Length: 266
Image (tube, rainbow, N blue to C red; front, side, top):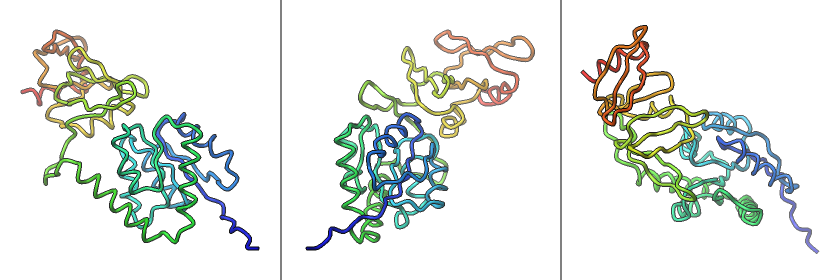
């Protein structure tokens, strides 16, 4: 009688900017005797370095991360050199069809034990195949799908015109031209758009780097303002200014940032 082929240990890397999400994947993997977690990463650049260092068989890869996201990790490594990928995402179910088609599997946050077991079963079947060339073609197809949904990039830099925000169990886009000002809030930033306030998990510096500097200007280490909403500027103490917005709100302008604001609004 033939002896069933024993699969070698699957060396896995966990990538997510949320520690709790990494914990969920790691705890789920503890029950799997043929899976070894070789490393964990909290951002895209660290994931690229870990993939190059550890050469894992499998990557649980968060899609949405500040700075370099999951697709950026695939692009940085190269589809032909990527391990098997299970995308971990908070996108709506209708948006994960590309992940289903082009990755070993996907996990929609929050996932349960049954769904995790199904994804891992798909990974095992995937790794049993002689799949290097197939995987490369699949990931190239995913990147083509993603690129086709992005706005065309002109020779000049393209800045973000909208940002994803969570609305209950779904995500929606908030147009940046509706945002009056932005402030830091721990590990999040708060976007003030009229009477609406939305929180996004990122740093102020990372968000500002994606925005048009002719529109969104830093006026304090914790604050960025949409200059089209600035109605007037008034000198304050110690070289600082006060910016009054069109809705009457007053924001402090630090003397370290006032010259940039004055040049932008003039």
